[in-house]
Length: 542
Image 1 (cartoon, rainbow, N blue to C red):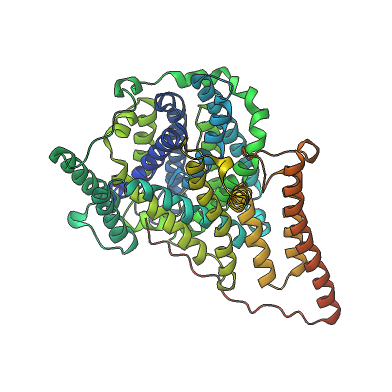
Image 2 (spheres, helix red, strand yellow; image 1 turned 60 degrees about the vertical axis):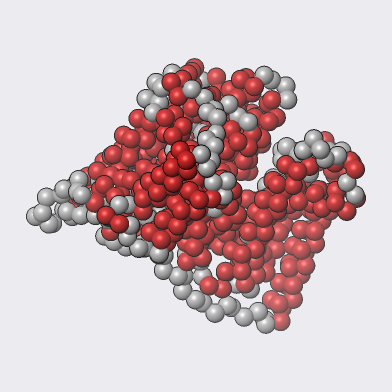
């Protein structure tokens, strides 16, 4: 055992703190702004009800990782233990907003006043995160088994699809609204975090991007070259929020039934964070910090449950950048500082001030970095022969992106959808069907292709059979505009016809591959694929 005493706070914790803290603040900003911008969700409600509990999840998780770092240092005698970084899961942020909270709010608004619809949406979000926490708690008991069962290319492929097509692209649309400030901040992010060129005066790259983008933004506003948007709320109304305390009355339990239709979206994201947590633990081990995998996933589960029980709507996850924080010289203090800052932002309400003064064009470039990094890591952690499986998983996500913008055009009062030609209406219908449930579709398509590449035709046939079954219940390819699951006998004839065509396509594919497998088995002509090593994870980015 080393005789050196563990110094849990070091100068490197400053850089590490700004990196981890800004990641979390960006995700909170993203949650509120996307809900308000894309679904007209009341900003004040989100700040009073959703943000405090979501921030508490970060508070609990990072405090536990701080404590685990102290215990690991005491047990090993290492003077350089770095705490695991934890924060809000970026893919889940987009997933919850676009596939759970947003659709639930629009559906509730059809029959309820806006405030009641927002309250019902909040309850569905709580239920979703609560179920995610329970699911991750079970996964913590068998984390290594899960990694062996879930096809890596399938899971990482669906994550890369979300990362590249949604996480990186959607913030880009906000950035180009203010291109001078936004592209300046993006240049700093790409130069420091992707190219690894140090920002002057040793300022952390994420903080440097925020400073540069904000300086350009407000300088242009002062000069009259851009108009500041109208405030969405009174900052004073967000201070010391108390309305979230109603969560302890447990009325949200009544929304569990309504939450079930969103589980095909919620559970894959939860599973993704579990496998990601395993990867994070392994990456920490490569630089000498041997954390127990089950305990890391357990902390993730506890933090997610804590968020749900306090009204949070976004799950937490360990971040892959542990070696980068260690390279910065971070120890455990950065985790403690992030816990206190983010937790305080939610509980004391100064996040409302941050939301009001931080230009989105200045902070959203970090989300583009996250999207690019997740995509790159997906390829690096996958055997080379499975690269095509990663690529094919992006196609359903591209359908969602196309459908998102075409639906905005079609819903414009100047457009008469019933006047569109038959070919155009058929294209729009196929876009909607391909995009509904695209996360599961991406996973199944990528898993099926990976199995084919490995010459495992029977396994590939099984994946397409699962796709056919899921289609019959609307888990994927739901013809309903609400993307809801269904029972076949409740569909209208035209909807039933569409479902049968898609399910029939998957059944035909599964049958073809099954017969092909039998023929190859009899002839003994199916060779095993050449093995190639999984690429070493590049964990140098923060």
